[in-house]
Image 1 (tube, one colour):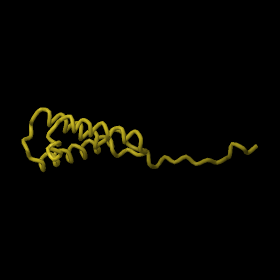
Image 2 (tube, one colour; image 1 turned 90 degrees about the horizontal axis):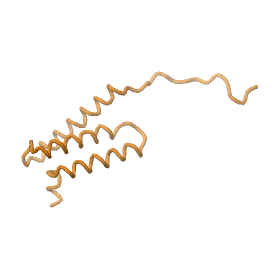
Image 3 (spheres, helix red, strand yellow; image 1 turned 90 degrees about the vertical axis):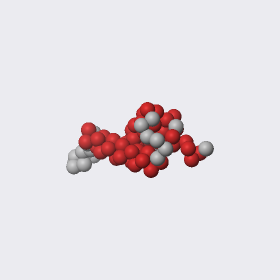
Image 4 (cartoon, helix red, strand yellow; image 1 turned 45 degrees about the vertical axis):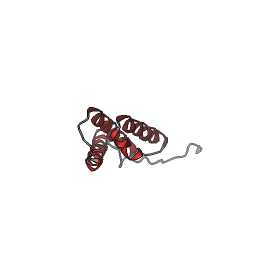
Amino acid sequence: MLMEAWKLWWVWLVFAALLGLAEMLLPGFVLLGFAIGALAMAAVVATGLFGTSFALTVLVYAVASVGAWWWLNRVFPRDRGNVRIWDRDINDN
C-alpha cells in the first residue's frame, strides 16, 4: 500500500505542505521550488494525466521542481555583490 501512495493526489499535497513548512523553518531559498513541484504534481495526479508509471511521475516531478526553482531565481534574484562596509563604530565619539 505504501508503494502506491505516489498515485494519490493528497499525498503530493501533504508533501508540498511539508516542504513549504521546511522552507519557512530552515534558512535558505532551496525547498520552495520542490514544494511548488509537488503542488504541480498534486494537480497532475488529481487530473489523472498519468497512468501507473512511477518513473514518468518522478521525471515530471523533477522537471517541475527544477523549473520552479529556476523561475523563482529569475523572479527573485539575490544581490550578491552588494556588501555593506562599515567605516565607523556606533560607540566611537
